[in-house]
Image (cartoon, rainbow, N blue to C red; front, top):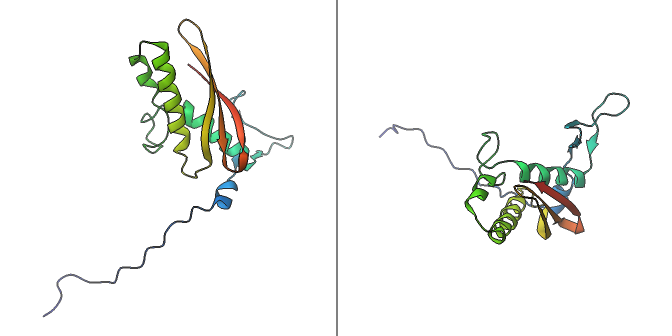
Length: 148
C-alpha cells in the first residue's frame, strides 16, 4: 500500500549549553544614558562596550522598560511598573519594588545576574529614587537606580 503522506526520521535534538564563559563575552555598542545616544569616538566610529558594561546596560534597560508594552521584547523582559499604583502603604510599595526589580534582573536569558541587594529608597511626595546593587557572575557588581 502506498503512503499518502511522506515520512522522515526525526533528527536528534542538541541541548543548548549555558557556559558561563560564553555568557561573559557578550558585547554591544556603548549607550550613554546621560546623552541618550550611542557613544562615538573622535574618529566618528561607534564605541563598543565591554562585557560587564553590556550586562549593566541590559540591567538598566530591563528595569526601565514596562513589561508587555513593546512587541519587540519577549514576555519575560521588563518590569511591571503600572501595578505599583495599586499599593497604598509605602512598605507594601517597597516590598513590591524589590520583588519586581529582582525578578526582572534574574530573568536575564544569559544568566549573568546572580542576585540583587541593598535597596535604598529616597521618597518625595509623589516620586522617588530607588538605589540598589546588582551582583553578577564572577563577582561583577554595579550600583543602579530607578527614578519613579
